[in-house]
Amino acid sequence: MALTGLDIFKLLPKKNCKECGQATCLAFAMALAGAKTSLDKCPYVSEAAKETLGGAAAPPIKLIKVGKGEKEREIGDEVVIFRHDKTFYHPTCLAIRVSDKLSGAELDAKVEKLNGLVFERVGQKVSIDLIAVQNDSGNADTFANTVKTVAAKGNYALVLISENTDAMAKALEAVGDTNPLVYAATEANYEKMAELAKKYNCPLAVRGNGLEATAALVEKVAAIYKELVIDVGTRNLSQALAEITQTRRLSIKKKFRPFGYPVIAFTTADNPRDEVVQASVYIAKFASIVVLNADEKSQIIPLTAQRINLFTDPQKPSQVEPKVHEIGAVTKDSPVYCTTNFSLTYYTVEGEISASKIPSYIIACPTDGTSVLTAWASGKFTGEKIAEFLKTCGIEDKVDHRNIVIPGYVAVIKGTLEEKSGWKVMVGPGEASGLPAFAKSHFA
Image (cartoon, rainbow, N blue to C red; front, side, top):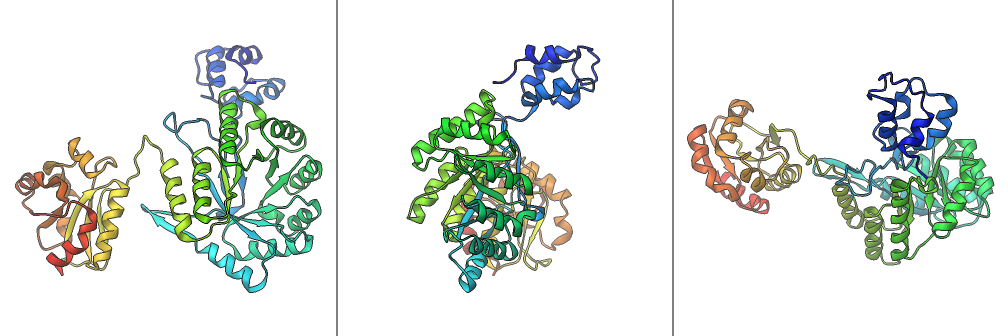
């Protein structure tokens, strides 16, 4: 259980030196209990106290790293249940299963397909994160060879799935230095599996059977090795959702250490569409890794979009740099469009203008990352504001004409913008989808 502020205060040196940034040791203790400061801020705390206070000072969910270098992914280290309380920091990792029954050209084609699951959305490069190699063959050498091939040709970190400790040992001999996630320690093999993970310093998944059994097993494994990920073992979606939610609540609200680790979840549906639905549930509540079979772009894109939405700070709207953006091989005669610097708005407009095949300029006005109507209603996207930005953004040096297209939904600002800027204002379509036809009718 979590220590209270008074429990922590009893273990502090009580110097009231203020070197920690707090007025008193009691204030520091209360801040530490509320996870608002860290134990290392106190220069005089004893080693004995550090051991006792380690749990209180640690994040409620441990930070775990899978992979190395560009392939590295961080999971865990979350401190809230609801993102509006603060924010979520480490997006759910998507892992695609690869069976070790695949070999040769078939395996190469599978890895190449997974390498292609990279997309761009609202200016962000997104992709899957992990390849989960599964020991379906039951053969240790086959598993190790498949793992070696995937590690060499794949662009992602690995999850090694086998309960056979001999197979896992051979796989780790081949790729242990890449920091794969070892899956899984069970009641039957946890001692050997924990020693293997410890030997190669790799994260280890612990698979239980329901909440109580998982907590008990985690305590046993943590006595040997502490770089853990937990799997509650439940595969029924509704029950798994309830149990994973409980691990999050207990770790954050109660500081229950056996559940203070990231969670891995597995989809079970045979239909890829149903699999995507299951994965979306786990992304929302509260899996750090979701392992699935679905590997088509049409199946992965909605999951990456959901992930971006959930793991974007709700207090800081996603926005692009407010400036003049060039689309295509622009010239002095290229048309000029105006929109806000809200990422979703801007990239929607950019996509439609690109589709028109007419090189153009887009002026992303500074609106604190708000959409067109929201910015207009709050006074951030008015004729006066746009006119001011036109004079400072540099567009007047890039084009010989003085014509600008504004969104149709804010046609009301046309007169003011013309008066304040001296530019001729054209009212564009209300929806971005109308821009290709608009561009071809006016600028082709």
